[in-house]
Image: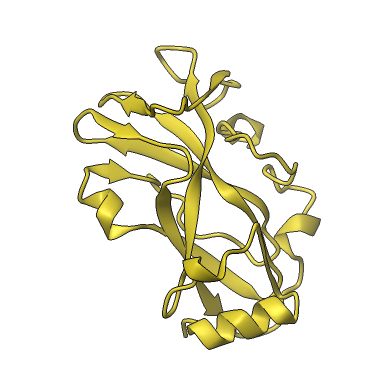
Length: 178
């Protein structure tokens, strides 16, 4: 079941959900709007390798915005730092963003109970589009979990995205054994 606005507010009051900075105006009927930070990154290599650490070049979105181009994977991050201790967070793009041809995640829309960080966005576009820091980019939807959690994400030794950072994080696939 999805949390309603009142249930999200209760979870925030009980510190089961943390959102920093929090803006009451970003609370929807059953979601919370998140915003694009000023931080973007692109991969330095032309060919990415799943078994190697692919490095990225970080840059900031200027006040006049930045034009995203098709054929490039952009990594962005949410302005908001979030924690979820009892719920499963799902990040979905806002429909207004999708109508501009912007996808904000290729595969990683679901977070884990215990995820505590800024969200890295895997941004791609259908055609050139100018984006701006601070623009609404997505919405978090929270689901109840059935049963007890054995190990929260932020306590797993194998968790690869636990280091708190406002910067988008590149793929850590290379840390997997395969």
